[in-house]
Length: 418
Image (cartoon, rainbow, N blue to C red):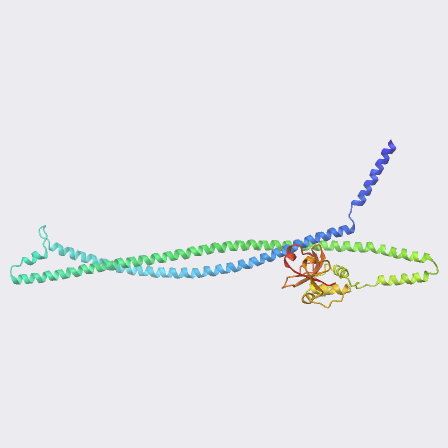
């Protein structure tokens, strides 16, 4: 019984050790896939951040134009307000002169009132009233009668003129007072309207400036995020390169051991064939030490292009020291063993044959509307990914065209070389 239990414990422990050794650490290939996937996700985030930053910059330009327009409107209104205030000041000075004229008219009116009052008082005797008829009939002689009639006519004409002048002055006074009041009221209303419009424009300007400040803060945050993502992508690229070197170093001894085993097997087959075997081994060794340009397939082109991931973007660049998008494709085709004369995106747009987007497959050329129609080009890898030389960091890399920036700029133009 103890032996069975002990055996069981040993078996479980041994199985655990195997499990630990098996699952404790992922293989280099798995680590490379993980880093590659993480970089792809990071590139997508970086692409989204770049697009968002471009949108913010565009909106900021629009807001700057709006602020400039508001400043122009405020400046014009301030000029109108200044003119209105000057006109109000002029009218106030006119009002002072008019008030002086009104005082003079009022004095004339008051003087006439006194004259008429005294005239009326002279016609009243002993509490009774005396009219002009009684004055005329009270004449003692014809000469006196004529004299009285003449005097009464003069008095009546004088009174009539006084009354007419009094009415005219009174009317003039009322008209001038009313005109002045209306004009002053009009100017005050205009002043209030301009002040109100300016207050509204100032409020709009303040809101626009606040929005612009918010966007500027967002722009700073996006720039900082871009820098962080680029630093992180650079770190992952370094890790990925290290893993690729480890895989290459790991596979190199296996290749040598396989070659050695093959040579030993050839040597032990028979003495009569040893010389032929050595010649074959020598020929194989010479072939493996050379650097073939490729077998002329799209896979060779893709492999050549993938070897340049991380190469910086250089405008007009056509070598591993720096590529632009068309220069990178020309170099990759050349290294893959395919002779393509195209060296610009315009020329690549006529290479091979055009195929529908729905039939797109690995190795097809895909075009994007950046810097004009079909201004950017890459090699489709499948699963919504493409390989190309982008102006954004790190240059040559795999990008996602299923969503984000590249999905929005994909032109739908697809060409098949072979």
